[in-house]
Length: 445
Ligand code: AMP
Image 1 (cartoon, rainbow, N blue to C red):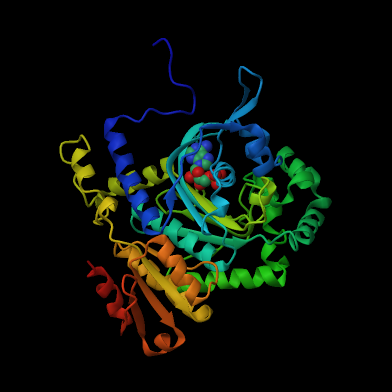
Image 2: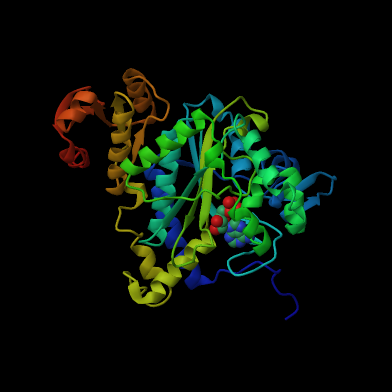
């Protein structure tokens, strides 16, 4: 053969492409059920975007970006990750004046990193992910974690694992960083060359180096959780409390820091037993400083990205174990396509939006999250308030989003085990038992 494909890239042939489309269809539907809108950004961007956004001391920017001059000498790069471009598009597309938060997602978006190809690591790979821009409270983090967990479950049913941690904020991180530096100060000679550089420029990354010598030192290193300021600690506790109501299983992983500079507070990773714990399916977290770093107003945000190749590998392993629930017919993959996936209605036919409004404190908001998740599991697109709005403001927001029904949960309804069902067309409300609420909603015109 004259010319083969570049190292670290793949061709997706028809049978395989059918498996991709099936997983993609499930992910599109999930993001839409959670109230996200799709965004597509360019494959190439100005290199500065990632140098500013992801951080010059990150592995991606330091070693893995494809940077090249175009014919006019501009420094461009093939997109290595999705968050900085989505935030750029949010600012450039005027979305900061839209009702907040703005919830954006992408599926099977190609990413490029010049890393050493290995099992599950490619130079062109694809990610599905989302960003919630404009919401700073712990409910937004919990909802993002719940969605990431649901995405993995949609692709590979059973066993999705969530690892959770908090890495603090600009208030508390400097003192943690110093504690970490102190721990390593007299042992720099034992670190790998990369980590010696990290010690100077990005010490948090010392915790997730794979080198055996560095791992040994990392095992006894101080962890971020013990250095959180009181606001970050309260935020983390609230995220956990919401996740428990959402019935999302998670494990705290105190050494989890994530590779990109922009994270603040919550960080998380997704795994699956089919892939082994060292191979992450994806990850994400909160990044409250990035919008400002890219020239916008101070705006909190959170999101995650999942590796499509790894999701598909985990799904293939699962199918290989004889647990396939769907038959692929003639092998062309077309039979599997027709099912749409997951037994949910095709998203084009999704019922109208349901808004779950909170008329009370945190306990009520927690139940609203659980109710919205239950609605989405039944294929009903649902939204909750992530900005602590008053009930009146929530109803206005629900109308703006086009919700046809609002479930209203207050302290009294919570105590009585009921919920108010409000028809947005005529403003009429009736009280129903909580367990009947979703049946009542599903029976709408
Ligand atoms: P990151 O953007 O580095 O947080 O990566 C998120 C997810 O994307 C990872 O957990 C992987 O599933 C996937 N991923 C990252 N880099 C690669 C790569 N080089 N090849 C294949 N998948 C990748």
